[in-house]
Each structure stands twice: as C-alpha cells, then as structure tokens.
Image 1 (tube, rainbow, N blue to C red):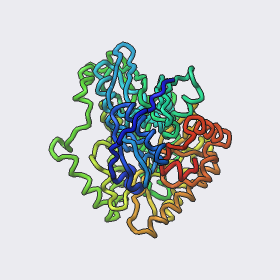
Image 2 (image 1 turned 90 degrees about the horizontal axis):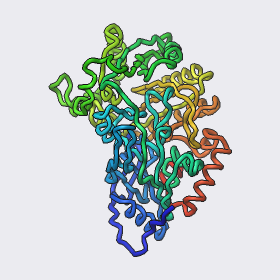
Image 3 (image 1 turned 120 degrees about the vertical axis):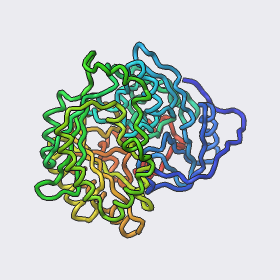
Image 4 (image 1 turned 90 degrees about the vertical axis):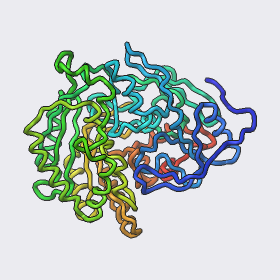
Length: 480
C-alpha cells in the first residue's frame, strides 16, 4: 500500500461541462477534470475532500444512465489515462491504464493471435469502466463477466492510498471493487487476460426464432457447445409471434480450419467498415433512423429485419470477423442521436432461468399495453459470478431500449412503467445491471443483491471511502 496524497496545495483546473449518460436522457452540469496520472487523481481527491465535494469516476461515458454522472458535483474523466503499458505476446496478458478502450486492447492483441475474453457491444468501453461495471458479452454463459479476466488492479482510494489488489491478496476488496460501480476507489492500473484465437474470423449462423419460448429453447440447446449466443428480438410482435427474433451463434475456428484466418488477424481488417455498401458513410444513417423513430415506423423496420433473417439463415453458416460480429453498436456512429431530443434509456432485467419465460413475456406484454414499445430488444444467456455487487444470474437477460419523450408527462409515464416492470423482475429473484439502469429506487438495492451483500459492500465503502468522496447520481438514487 502506497500513500500518494498530495502535500502541496495545487490549483486543480476543473472545467464546467454538461455531463450526460450515453443515452442522453439523464445527467447535468459538473466540474470536470481529465487527469493523465495517478498523482493528478490523488490531487483531485484531496481537493474534493478539502472542499467537501463529491466526485464521480467516468471512463468512456458508455453507461446508458447515471452511473458516471454527478449533477452539480465533480467528475474525473479518465479517458486520457490511456496507455497500454505492456502486452505479453506469449501469454496474452495486458497491463493498462483505466482509459484504455476495448478497441485499444484488441488492436494490440489480435496481431499476436489473442482476442479479449469479454467484450461489450461497442469497442469504445474503457478497461476501468469495464471492471467497475463488470460488463458482460455474448459469451457470458461460457466465460463469465469481465471481472473474471482481471488478474489484478491498483486501486487509488479517496484518501490517497494505492492498493495493489488480487484475488489472493485481498479477496474482499477485489470482489467488491469489480462491479462496485466506482464507489471504492479509482483503478489506475489493470492486468487483463485475453484468449488465444487461431483465426481473425468466426463461424456465424443465424437462426430464426418464432417466439420467445423458441428463443429461450435455442439458448438452452446451444449454450453447452457454442462460443457466443445472442438474439435480436422484435418487441413489436404480438400474439403467437411475441418475442420472435433472430438468434446468432458464433464459434471460434480451430488451427487450420480457416485457410485465410491468419490474414484476418491484421487489425486493419477487424475494424467495423466506415461505409454502407462501401459507398454511403455510416455517419449519415442516424437521421434516417431518427425519422423511423419519430414517425412511428420502428415496427415496420423490425418486421423487415425479421423477414430478412430468413435469407440470412439460409446462407448460414458464414465467416465474419470478430470485430464485425461483436461491435454492432459501432456500425452506425452516433446512433443514439436518433432518439433526440429526449434521448433513450435501457431497461435490462436479469431473470433466473425457471422464471425466465413467464417474467420476460410479462415484461414485453406490459410494455406493449402501456404504449412504450422498445425499439430494440437483445436476449442473452448468463451464469453467476463471484462478485459482491453482481448482476449475473443463472438465467437470461433482455435488454430493452426505450426512446424517451421530450414531453414531461410521457417521460414520467415511461419511468413509472419501468418501475412496475422492476417489481415483476424483483419478485422473481431477478437482478439489474447498473451500466444500463436509470430508473431503480433505493428500495430496490437490497432486493437486487440481498441484505448481507449490501451490508458487506457498505462496510467496504466505510473502510476505503469513509468521507464518502465517491458519489454519482446513480449511487445517490440507490442510497449507497
């Protein structure tokens, strides 16, 4: 443990900015600092303590809600602490600062035949954010959450102590800080494991699912053998087709299975293409999507996508690069702008398998009945993990993206619906993922994790941040 507390008075160059969640629906004004060193982070912590102010930690700003916002307070934007300090081409272990992104990591690792074990739907996520939120990917059922590929991290606490933490050295802190949404300290250095790949491409198959139960059955049938599984759901479909969608299964290729596979380990061949059909810049697409959302045509778009799935299924399996398969959210730059001016929120329940079909069907039906139909639904299979503030269950998650109206009454109606849906999920023993949440109340926090876990987390908070320097809009909303 090292003390990095600044001893001399330092003028901290805070800047007044508008800081919002990725979905743009929540956030507010804050004083922002972009440090480049751990010493600057420590100085900011000291300044906050001296002024009696709270600080929120922010990585790449990819959390949909208020996990990295601090209305009226201070925000440490760690995006400039972005050095990839080391990568071992023999083991695939990377050492990096918290602002290193998923894209930074795979661009270094893939040329050596390694790919990150767990990635999100966008490559913009930072390593510090990925660990603090304990993100998951399309292979959560097989390899678990991001925290399971973290070997160690250095945690700078609000009192200036630098703690090197591993599963062996301090298991309580290790399992509380990962998934602890930035409440215990700032991770200034992380050691991350990647996995060996023998081709720059995956074997991908599309499977049309006729309804929700069919989707869940495919997940159960394939999770013992597939490397990745994810299903897009048409949440506008009703009646016999409720929960229909298109499942994608992807599998890694073994040595020699793909004669051209080594060529696709070139990082330049993994990036998401910038143009549609090689001609139309994808940055021009979000206005068309905006028109579909605001003209009430999302149902038609979803119907067309579902119909196109039959043709994709017929040509399956096919080969696709890792980047093209994983990073669907990067295909259309600034796609979230299609929900302006109100923005978007995501409601993502995690439901134990025995209650999965009943709860998810109820959630979809209630959304449709309330007139708040999500324009996007994504279904995944999950497994439990060992982290204290985990969202993971042995079951399913359904991520539902809602466009937020700029009309206050309509906005409040959506929040009310989501809290009603949360009651359905919590009553079934479900959980929630704080990188996506914008609606849960403080009463939900102990119900998500259980009173013993909440008590243990609050004890860690009292130990490492007794002055409660680290706060966010999320932590205050949850009563952390």
